[in-house]
Length: 260
Image 1 (tube, rainbow, N blue to C red):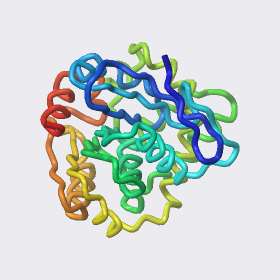
Image 2 (cartoon, helix red, strand yellow):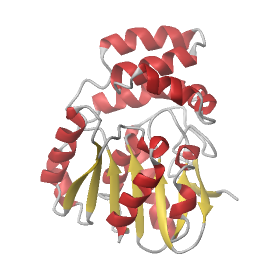
Image 3 (cartoon, rainbow, N blue to C red):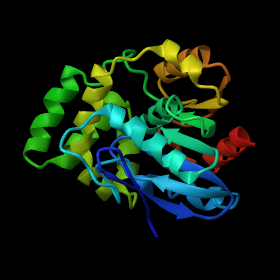
Image 4 (cartoon, rainbow, N blue to C red):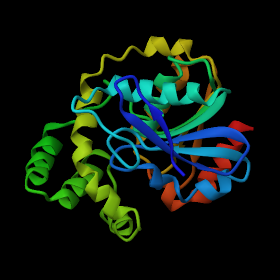
């Protein structure tokens, strides 16, 4: 059964509940929906009421003709407040940025676990090479080729890892959502981001970084750690950006440790 929260612009934001216990919201990243968390949901649902959220424009959530990244932040904050008690939030990639920003809009976040969030202004998230390759492919319906370009050019995912991803059940859903990638990358580039604001995030925050991820991921996590009042960085040895699928048990162990 899907739970639906209605955002301020009328968009329905859906999330799927699992298990029972203290509430834990999972926020997915770019090019996926809530099903990307399925490898870790059963273990987390043993101790939490897990709410796997679909961000606007995918899954059980609606969309709006005009996309604004700030609405993503308020969607999550509103969902958190609707629960009526403090909530733990785990975000991956773009979803981790949403978690940090939502914590500035509500006092009902107990703890945050942020796996490799982007840092607006730190990198060219919508580089010309990617834009020139993706947009023509999407225009003619070649979503799979566009998605592979995104993974290889921006996330530095190796060809052999992309081949493994193609074999996963979630791959067709990723392909179908490829058209949502440009709007999120463009929003990251245009977002006026003031790191000093994060001093107002008062809840403990753990940044997870894959030990096999590019060095810039560690640099970004370290920058965030320095900006927040209560933050730490933990490394998942041997893992990259997609550890939720590659090593779900490892990810669950780090989430449990962070939320203890």
